Image (tube, rainbow, N blue to C red):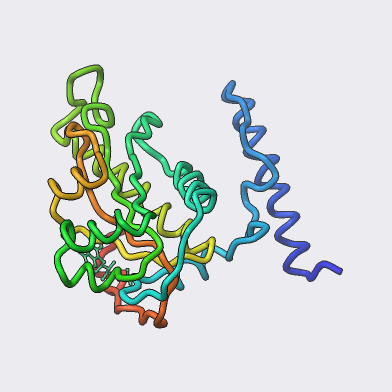
Length: 222
Ligand SMILES: Cc1cc2nc3c(=O)[nH]c(=O)nc-3n(C[C@H](O)[C@H](O)[C@H](O)COP(=O)(O)O)c2cc1C
């Protein structure tokens, strides 16, 4: 038997999608929504509010391995991230083999990040292809230029770490790394801009939430 709240949510979803479809039709647009648009919980995932609370940077991992299929699922989820004109310039280079990871820890990461990510199942270098996001043809659309590529890459990385957590994997975004070494070890094209290395693994400790600023400090409603 559905609870009152479930009945209400079902009704609200129906009303919202019906009115959104009507508004889109009136505007001459197609409706590419589907029944799941407002669903609260996926088949195998967490509720969103819970997910953003439990996703924390993990700096101690238990030994684990990640399959190609599992990594592909996380990246497929991350591809839902918005990007400039849907340019999707973010790229992922996943070090999953023991030898490649060992080189990354030894040569490409400072000792504290190597220690923090030791025993992670993967070290994923996240890059973007410059000159596309934020560009009209070959000209930058505005003063930000390739910062839009970095913006999109940050959005994609957010989706990536949340998708990983949703699928049972913990992560650590590491901005401090040796760019030239990472590119050499992973064979990243010289033209791509390296952003971060994301460790993906199974937490060996329960991470503590670090405090956040009060909303009033970061939000001005004008
Ligand atoms: C762009 C970026 C770079 C970061 N670089 C590092 C890093 O090099 N080493 C590290 O231990 N944590 C790094 N972090 C993790 C942050 O310290 C962490 O996200 C922040 O303290 C908030 O904690 P939380 O992720 O647990 O919510 C980085 C995070 C971001 C977004």
